[in-house]
Image (cartoon, rainbow, N blue to C red; front, top):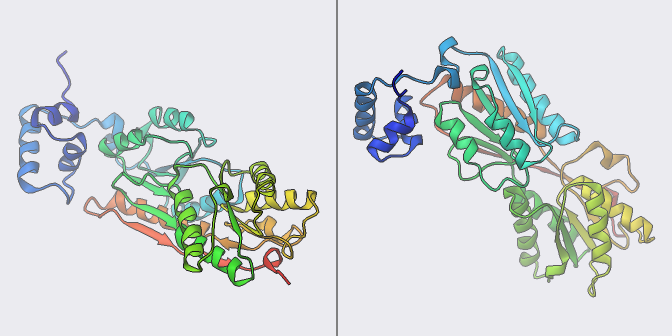
Length: 337
């Protein structure tokens, strides 16, 4: 049996990228006419046949969508799934869920072992320690569309749906300043994540706007959980210049901060303000109640699924980046007087 011609063979002969060959064979909008004609001519000459087993084209639409998420146990991602499910159900699609447990190794294993013949497309939120997203590009190059939601692979040219992390963080810190706090720390998520950096930049720019100082020791990068928030806050309390407020990257870390402050008998609000990001239901169950930026989790899932269906059904559909605003919710944890 002779060698089976692949898109990699065509790309190598013409000295173009695999992605360009894939897009030309799918007749997408973003490959120029001359290049497309060369690719199609060579594909015909070499008797290239699409990899039906990889793309699922042999049997047509499967009406299955893969959803790859870091977690399912927290409020935010369970709400994202609810938004995805609503659109999928209304369009007669099933969702197949894959959980990475926020591990890049597990994420890579899941993607490499996907049965793409069972899926029409993927919705993905990347793990926090993903250094490379080439495994996702390979899926796209094979003809399976991907839409990133929340945690995105910024270098990959496909649709993305995110909350407005920068302006949400800016608004959170501005609220603290307007509430009378002036020495504001930030307990952040892991370095390298796009949304973590945007929230950090929003924090810094709000301080800059109001001429307030910050210190490197007031910005702590660690995990997203409550224990990390507690540990970060104990570290802040040991600073020579102790802050009078904390902006947390999410509500779970903010709750951890409140636990630490209570253990040190520091009055939350009066002595030290705390604000989070998500609007987890726990915000209203703790005392004092937690101020936060409410994320549009349901709409992120809903919009992401709508965009994916457009990718699946319209080969000329341009990649789109959607940024949805958050909403400031002021509660007791930022009441100073």
